[in-house]
Structure formats: C-alpha cells, structure tokens
Image (cartoon, rainbow, N blue to C red; front, side, top):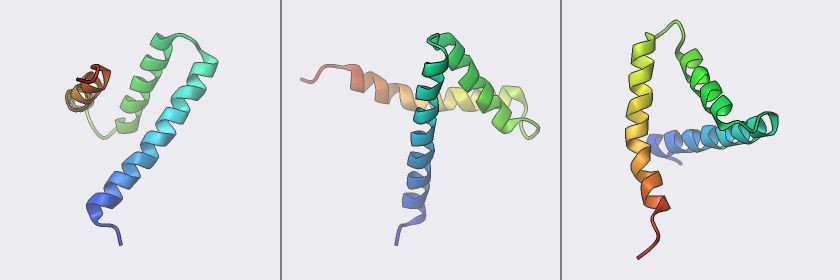
Length: 80
C-alpha cells in the first residue's frame, strides 16, 4: 500500500503527464512559445480565481520556479 507521500507524488506525476500532453497539443495549434507560455500562466491564475488574490498566485508561481529551476539547470549541464 502506498504511503500518503507516495500517493501525492503519484498524483503529481499523473498531473504532470497530462500537462505535458496539453503542452504538445498546444504546440500543434500555435508554434509561438510565447502564446503557449501565456496561456499556461493564465490557466494557473484561473485555477485559483475567486479563492486567492492574483499577487498570491504570482508568489506561488515564483516559489515553484525557485524549486524547479535548479533541477533544469543541473539537467542542462554536461556530465563530468
């Protein structure tokens, strides 16, 4: 039986998979990365609409970025 932490991680991975599928579908609609980036950010704000102020949503996004940027920076570095 999965622990609550494992279940949370599995839920996240399922959502991440769907988000990547959505991103690929969006690329088929518009080759402009800017259009896709803005649409995804709007979706985040819409997710929280009516429950959190926009400034709080922005702070949440910035917090997430601080966590994932090091992962992608490390991934981009050549090994060794």
